[in-house]
Length: 88
Image 1 (cartoon, rainbow, N blue to C red):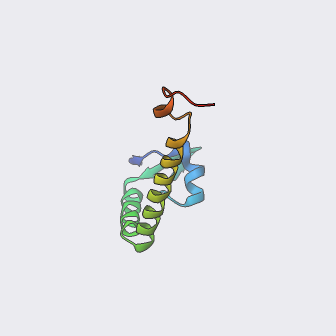
Image 2 (cartoon, one colour; image 1 turned 120 degrees about the vertical axis):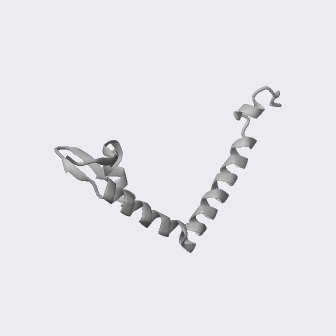
Image 3 (cartoon, one colour; image 1 turned 60 degrees about the vertical axis):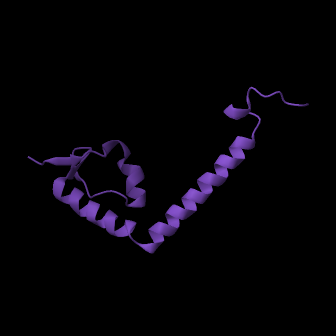
């Protein structure tokens, strides 16, 4: 019997595109992640997280999220602006 560490069956196709998951063992149509594959994936992800590319990507995402928040807060439909009277 295979001991499953994680179950990614519902989103395996999306994760396969990015290669962002451990290698599953397929039993029928169900993808099961073994403990050994999960540990190897965790080590791989930890190495990537410490890389300079990962830090740059995190900074880029943070800046993008900040800019999106500022833009949405300016909208008259934003929750913080709904009770204010809009001049037309």
